[in-house]
Length: 337
Ligand code: NAD
Ligand code: UDP
Image (cartoon, rainbow, N blue to C red; front, side, top):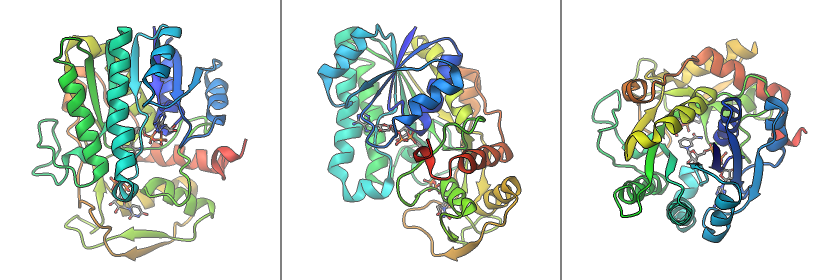
């Protein structure tokens, strides 16, 4: 079985490549490298002994997709290619809708034209918005705050509609909670451009000395220590969830599943765990709440266990250990070739 992974050179996609190659699948990375480094392909080869096929292309380019799907005989697609910064999605909303929504539509069209039926789509827990109740179940209402969240919701909707059309696709929508950590080898990991928006890569940059101090956004939330709570999930566990999703793709027309651990961790708890992993103090300063942030959310992981037979195996200590291992071995990310 050959699987196309759009966005396969990115943080999550590179870990899925490793997991799929280990599971005996052939992998074609389809990526325009707008937010990734070609060195990642070499790293995947070093981990697995096999280099994935690489097609440099844009997910909005139907002709390029059709020729890649046919040339490589792909039988399924995992669709990760997209833009993911909440802040940029406000200032560059046209680009976000074009890449995330139009890109998903073009990919669906290319799949219909080539007869590739199964698609696994990277969605996000951000589609839920403010939780009415916790843990967040898949049947919770969708009310995303940001253009980014709305592009994910619209991509979910268009895929769900196409699943019922005359030329149907089998769709598995995976709603990621907060992916962190890296492959245990420390050869691939999260390498954001510029100053990281997300907590774990920010802590890593403080730990390695590239940033002086972590701003903790808000210590007056209604949580036990006053800081925000999220459901962090190890990226290797998340990757394994995609292999499970591919195996389930033709059991049901549309399946929407959370990928999270079901456990919440506060900012201060994560900082403490990271300090334990790297053996250093992480300097922090309390700063005002970040606009649009939710106090606390975490997944119901029940459906993933029942339908995909998947659950996260790694805890916060392993997430911090592996994030630090990647950062320590690659202080400047993939520039350290
Ligand atoms: P990433 O930016 O590291 O990877 C995305 C990849 O897609 C990059 O390699 C980029 O070059 C490629 N890409 C972007 N636009 C493209 C286009 N138009 N054509 C072809 N390739 C394109 O991001 P990630 O963290 O690996 O996230 C992967 C997916 O998971 C994204 O769709 C993201 O929205 C979703 N997601 C991520 C998180 C997270 O916290 N990392 C959480 C929830 C959902
Ligand atoms: N956060 C923080 N400092 C940072 C980045 C994030 O205190 O530099 C907090 C943020 O307010 C939230 C949590 O860490 O409570 C997770 O933020 P992240 O951006 O990683 O994920 P998201 O909010 O998108 O789920």
